Image 1 (tube, one colour):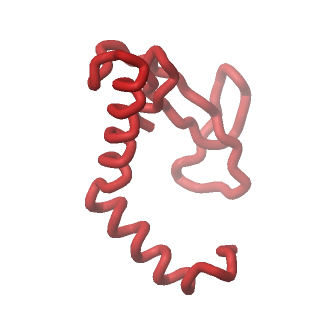
Image 2 (cartoon, rainbow, N blue to C red):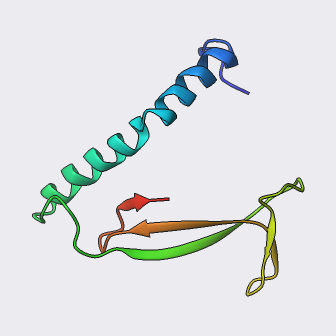
Image 3 (tube, rainbow, N blue to C red):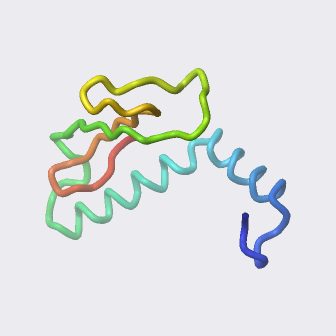
Length: 91
């Protein structure tokens, strides 16, 4: 379901997978967070992290699918770590 301006899906997936395996996305996220924190006049590295979770509904049954007992939601649970300014640190 890529736009027509993209190459074939196998090429796009190959690049995404290679970047994912090499940690490129984490490096990009770290650099964006560092620049944003410096813009706010804070230290480049955060001293506090807030952990939160989100239940994401899924359509298909899989090994990763479970039930969130508190919300009675079938699907996957995703955990996030953010700093006090709302910058995403880790998923």
